[in-house]
Image (cartoon, rainbow, N blue to C red; front, top):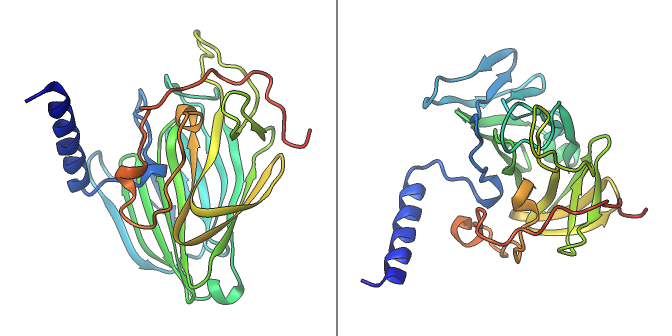
Length: 284
C-alpha cells in the first residue's frame, strides 16, 4: 500500500471512530484542545449540574423560570428562556496556552433570535446534556425549536445556534464593549477582535483576540462595527469561531443542512496568515 493510500485510509478510519463516539459536534462547535481542558457547570432553575469527568448530566422536558447560567473554565454565558437569546458570552482569561485575553472579557453582549411572541409561546427546555467541556441544549416552542451547542475551550469553533422554524429566523449578534468588526488586511474577510496585540511570553502571555461569525445556510443582512444580522434557514446555523480557525484561508462552509461535519471541518489544516496589524472598525 502506498503512503498516500495509507494516509487516506487512516483518515477515513479516524473520522469513522469519532463519528461513532456520539460526541461529534458540527464544524462550528469543534474546539481546539486547550492546555488545561474545560469543564462546564450549568445552573437550571437554581440547581447546578456539573457531572464528574467522563460522566453525563441530562435533563428533559423542563419549564425554565430563570436564565440558564453556563459557567466554564474558559468561557461562560447565560441563556434567557424568555427570548431564547444568549447573553454576556465571556472569555474568562484563565491560564491557557491558547487564551486570547488575560481577564474576563465579554466577546458577545448578545446573540438573539428575532422571534414573535407566538413563535416563543410554550418554550421548554426539551433536553440538556452536559459532559466535561461540552454542552447541547434544545429548546422547543409552539413554533419550532432552537439548538445551542457549546465547547468550553479558549478558542476554536466553540459555539453555535441552530434554529428550526417554519420560516427563516433572523439572528442578531452584538459584540461586547471594546470589540469591533473589521476587514482582515491579509484575507479580505470580516473578523472581530479588540485590536490588542499578542504577548508572546510571561505571566500576561496571550494570543491576539480574533474571531468571526460562522454561518451555514445563512445570509448576512446587516453589518456595522459592532452588530451583524443574519437570516438563517431552517436546518442552518450561525456559529462563533475564535483564534486560528477564524483567520485560516478557508473557502467557508458548504450549503448543507444535515450530516455536514466531515465536509466542513478544517481543524487547523489550512494556512494561517499573520495577525492583522492596527485593525480598524468597519465604518471608521
